[in-house]
Length: 261
Image (tube, rainbow, N blue to C red; front, side):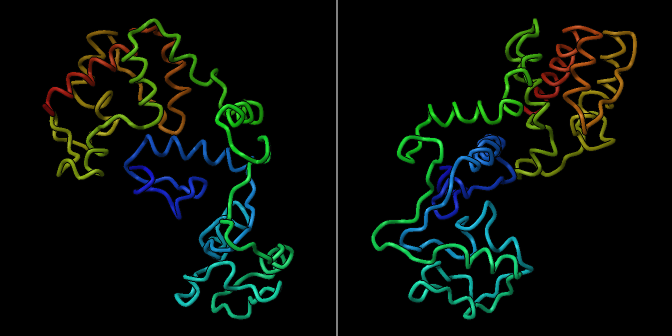
C-alpha cells in the first residue's frame, strides 16, 4: 500500500512526507538520515533527469524556478551523446553551478543494468537492515538515541498513557482538525462548548470542561503549553506535578472520544 501511494519511481529513497499518514512520515524521517549512507550509481540512465536523485540529495527540479513541459519526460540517457552531455537541448533553465556539477558527472551508461542506489557502508554495496541500523546509530546517535523519549517510557503510568503522550509530542492524536483534514468529519468545532477549534490546546486545556477537570484535580488551572516546544513543557510539568498530569490529560481525551462513538 505504501509503495503504490507514496513512492516515486519505486525508489524508497525518493520518498517524501505526505499529509494524513503519521506512520509514513516517521518512516520518511529515517529515510532522510539513510541518504547520507547511499550514493546513486548511474547505469542504464533510465532515471528521470529532473525528478530522480541522481546528482544530489535533491532532484534537479528543486534548483530551478520551473521545469518546461517539454523537458519533463527526459531521462538521463536522453541527454547523453557519445559520452558528452546535450544540455543545450533543454528548454528549462539551469544555473551555472548545476551545469558545472553535471559536467563533472561521468555521462556514460551501461545497457541492461538499472540505475541503483549503492550503500556506502555495507558489504558489496548491498543494503542489510542490521548494518543499516548499526550505521544509523553510530552516525546519528544524537538524533535517534533512546534518551530522547526515555522520560515517557519510564513514567509510572499505563502503557496506553505513555503512548498517548508520545502521540501528543508527534501531533498525531486524532483531534477534530486532524479528522477534518482526512475528510472524516465536516467541522473541527469543539462539540462540547462550540466556541473554538478542537485542537490539542483547546481539547485538553482551554475548553470549559477541561478547565473544570484541572481545577477539580489540582485546585488550579493548567498553564497552556508552548506548541513549539511541547516535549520540553511536558517533561517539566510532569517533573513538578508527577504522573497525575498525563493521567488527567488521558482521562480528558477518553471522555471526548466517547462523544465520537
